[in-house]
Image 1 (cartoon, rainbow, N blue to C red):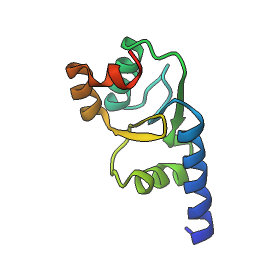
Image 2 (cartoon, rainbow, N blue to C red):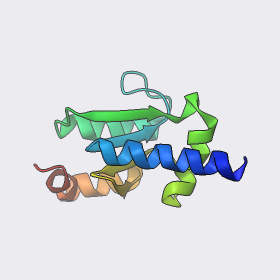
Image 3 (spheres, helix red, strand yellow):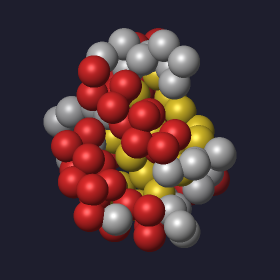
Image 4 (cartoon, one colour):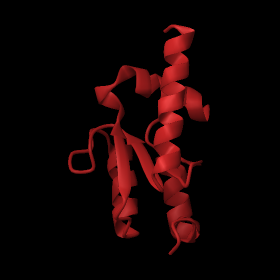
Length: 108
């Protein structure tokens, strides 16, 4: 990947995570998650009543799939962002959900 393309991808990701309150980079869609971790992440967000969920299917775009790993310096997908901040993947979301911390972050 050229440095210019890499920069464009990082800019696109930054724009996505800063213009939407809740962003989930996942495999598949909320209706049809393509892995168990993505399904778990969507289930947690639905349980918490998140209405304005912006999702990005990394399986549709290899550049984003790699770019998001670089952006957060986090090797796995799904990745959750709240108000522009990286929260974590499925395991971290589960822990934060169980402790009530995720609900607080989402303004609950």
